[in-house]
Image (cartoon, rainbow, N blue to C red; front, side, top):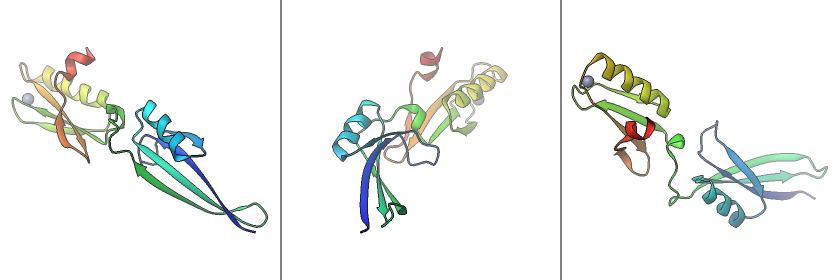
Length: 135
Ligand SMILES: [Zn+2]
């Protein structure tokens, strides 16, 4: 007889290149671990198992833990913008934003680059003092 097998993973994003941790048998276990790691999502896998124990179908459903504050590395986009001349750029990684700011502030003395993070939940938000933190 065909049956359904369900398990849960904690994951840091819904992107293809996400980090996953698990599996867990219950949503509660996965959620506890996700919160420990500041992972913002749970992934529910459903395997439809056929008569000969083969997997016939895989379904997965993402569940967002909306109250988990995800660290910078999992944010979708970083925006740099020079407060002095207005030149701006978009980056995937914090180090890329740092390189852009380094080059810009090197080429234009006394310009000051600000960093913003963009997330679906909060929109654009400035990260104050980001270069002091990275120094
Ligand atoms: Zn500038």
